[in-house]
Length: 209
Ligand code: ADP
Ligand code: MG
Ligand code: MG
Image 1 (cartoon, protein in one colour):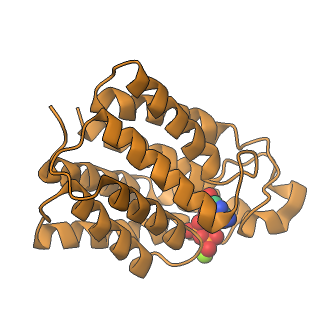
Image 2: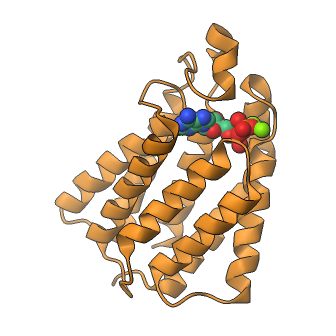
């Protein structure tokens, strides 16, 4: 079975719950190498996404992601708002007006999200940003899809790879965003945005089962 608009909304609601649950942890990660607002930023955004979905779920998964994108762009601010907003917007555009998503669409949507983040933020794997989680996630999703896996398995593969990618930022020197101001003092800390990306993908995978 594919993923319809109602299911896509459920996936985003799960993301909002995860962000709320991990708000303090994400902010503490950002306190170490940034300005201690990543959890609050994302929670404000995802709470607004929840409110928008409660007001009415749009007709297609793409339209659901577009609501998330515009809401995150207007509510989150900082670096992460435009980056996550762009990710959801590019995925929404890729999904178009399909009423159901299959594994191919999910993998393609994730690839479009990554391309958007990279176009906007110009980070590469190894710079200690959300790209360190998202890029391996996209590659794992594409492999899982090529192996014939379903939507939930594709998202689970993405979540597993994103977690590994987020963990891989600990020994890195941050080269983009606020953490890069610290230079080598950013070593020894997980990147907040990579961590939130991994948490979001885990929640999406679990909600899509
Ligand atoms: P701010 O740094 O403006 O306070 P947040 O704390 O909400 O914004 O988000 C910080 C996260 O944004 C970082 O942990 C990193 O993952 C991500 N980030 C910052 N700059 C970039 C960039 N150029 N490309 C990709 N991700 C980035
Ligand atoms: Mg911050
Ligand atoms: Mg900030």
